[in-house]
Length: 263
Image (cartoon, rainbow, N blue to C red; front, side, top):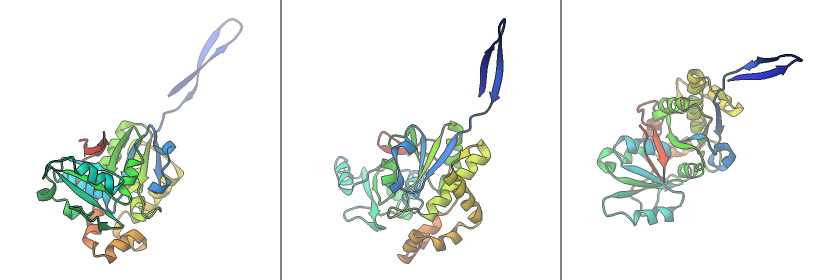
């Protein structure tokens, strides 16, 4: 952006360049859904991350041909929405505290959202943290769904928009989680390197964290309470699946209450 100032002398005016700066989009990161405030997301592009496992599930379901994902915070709302569909059109999916909700068809394992189950279906999804982060971001300019599965595609899409973005980590039990932080750090790193984005202090910190584990994300999760909880419940294959990088380039986008593929 070029800035000008007009200097008036007694007999003549001169127009002079006083600065020559380029605007860099700013990248902010919210540590958990519990810390989400509207001023952090309003009018910005937002990428929501819940690596273990909601945003990975959403991405997987759409990869496997689901028609749309309808996120909701409350179990009662999910049942209400489901009641409006004809038999065979929709499925209820989600969890509370990593356990399938009573009366739901599916829990929160990506392996439950394979093509033979979800193809052409509407999935009504509610989870402990991920859908809360999505619904808390509704004042954003755009809301997209990020995971390790599509992290580079997400970073590229955000960078191409060239406006300020906020990455919202869902976290777990009201607090920051390492797996979401690492994914957010990966996206921040790509946006800084490819698009010259300016990182907030926290975004810079998570980029630095990601760089330390870039070659072996799984090793970081020995320090991650939520990952250890899932491992203790027998979900090792889920955790390993959720840590795969860039197996798809789809951009799930929340628009008018439903998540579909942007491209």
